[in-house]
Amino acid sequence: VATAIMKQKGIANTHSEATYRRFIERWKSLHYDLWIWAREGAKAWNDKCASYIERDINLLQVGDVVVADGHSLNFEIINPWTGKPTNHMTLILFYDMRSNMPLGWEIMPTENTAAISSALRRAVLRLGKYPRVVYLDNGRAFKARFFQGSQDFDEAGYSGLYQRMGCQTIYAWPYHGQSKTVERFFGT
Image 1 (tube, one colour):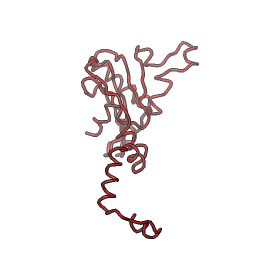
Image 2 (cartoon, rainbow, N blue to C red; image 1 turned 120 degrees about the vertical axis):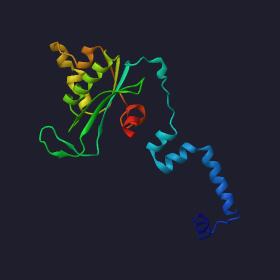
Image 3 (cartoon, helix red, strand yellow; image 1 turned 45 degrees about the vertical axis):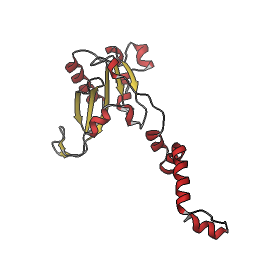
Image 4 (cartoon, rainbow, N blue to C red; image 1 turned 90 degrees about the horizontal axis):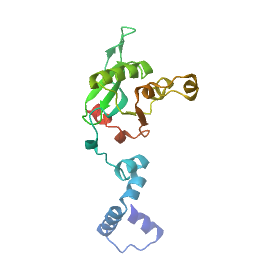
């Protein structure tokens, strides 16, 4: 295609196709990040080229960091309220970062505070202690006042559930599955 365009514009073409191919492959090897950005977009660049930090999970104890996320299931389940089969129920899971063990879960029609609370309760019962850090998804239900509290609630003497348990909360980057170890479990 390039040789046809060069011929049409009157540009002298003194090189073979193999020469152009070698030039492009060399340029690609030197500027791989630009190549990925131009050909595949920002998400691919972030996944393949961006700098990253590897976590050393050997510094953690079991139960120190618990990762929470919701996942839409792709099979029919009986809805507990209607008694009818329902597609795409949501699995809420609390997952230990150190041991890669699912700790607490709940399956509900939607990701809501009741489902998250139930899954968290099961995780705490299985661990036998409160986690030091809860690493959360950016979902709307995970950011509810019930868990985080708010300025108005603090003034009234109410605080979020995580704060009352003595847990620090950290939110994952939006649309960045690599930052949550539970995503690999969902893939399996």
